[in-house]
Amino acid sequence: MRTAKADLPAMRFGDYEGRTIDEGPLRIAFESMPAGFPPDPSVFEGLPDDRCQCPHHGYLVRGSARVTYLDGREEVINAGDAYVLEPGHFVQTIEDCEFVEFSPVAEHDVTRAQIMRNVEQIERAAGAGS
Image (cartoon, rainbow, N blue to C red; front, side, top):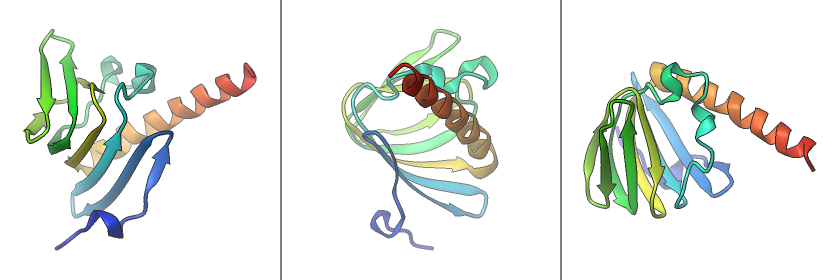
């Protein structure tokens, strides 16, 4: 199995870009995010504890990001770091970032579906205010 980022279609949301492919039970994601992403943490509302419950294994190619957990743990991931994110995390980028991440498809689908519902609500609310 070989996957190249350039061979995958891009999904864009503002300055976010994600390219994913599923290989068996794992989703491989190439993601680029601007500093301060996500700008609105409410995108995780509706998930348990309003946090991402999907475990992720990854590598930060560029940038830095802060990871927080409800129990008060906090760490900064920097370019060149491999990492494991446990369920119940929240990540916000400090600098523009590029990640390569591996996640279980089923858990990631649940998280992504809730995020997309929240993004649609945020966009509708913003459009109604215009």
